View (cartoon, one colour):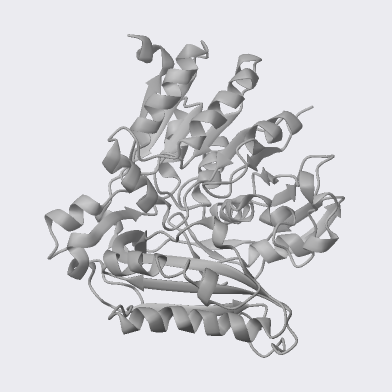
Length: 457
């Protein structure tokens, strides 16, 4: 039967999501045309930078290799699924090399495409006077931290994804692209939309936005989470996108969670900023005329998105080294638990201060006393509380010294305290997030295709 839509699933909402979800989704929905996998949160690239510093062949989401390996049997059985993912991180070529290797080993002759050009760190380093990357809230220039910068990547759009698909890529691996742009690229490839067909691009952007966080649109972190049917087996989302840019959101039959107007509306409003002008590199979207209507069990129709030309700049996500941090948590039980927990935290910091160890930032929280939801819970009757002490400083040695001050509470702290067996708190690197802008004319994205046979030569 001929369909009048394309089917796009998303089975990764972040780096660390369920690694078996892509295989399950393809098995549950064998008619998928495209599968997107989103690995990159704001600071994911700083983690990849650390890995690449240790091994230049790394710098990508290594979980992706196992995901591809699990999908190979479907391709070998004739599945025509196209896969698009930003798993390439800081090293799309390295990721593609690893993917091509396992495809060759499995005698699975697919074509792998990569999209590059989002990494703009070299521009800042080579011409700091021109590329100052002013923080879009404070106005401060990133050049003031040039020695500490770890990554700087532009959120590029869908055009190179669509081009790679059009030239025959079965798998497209990108670095930083805007989250919805992976789905937009699939739609552009399928329907041949012009880059100024803004209403259709707006609809595709809404589609990508709804599925980009995986199970959030099928009930994950919903206000209705406690009422979900079978959250153990929550289904990952699928969108059916029509040629006019309208869409339906659904999930595979027999999976848990739910898709209704409320789960869709919750995700629709997630991180959009101005609803009259949601900014993406492909189109600026007006959400205010969007309609959301249930059209069947676990099926919601979304239509009415309007678009206009994108801005002349790309958003840049930059990260920089921002010092060190450490934290400890202990559980205190019994009479006046919250009061005793808070006093224990104060004792730790006061002991360190007496040794001239004072931190640039410190925090004492007593979870269970109302610290996270002030004014809601009376602390006096709490019979169990979790003490959390966190410190941060540019001096690593001070942060490491904090870790040595927790164990002494075993004999000098409040009675009824547990949790010491987790070990001494360690100092961890802190990366600051720096949102800024760059002119489109200064970013040159490209795509390259590789055939699996090339790996064997």
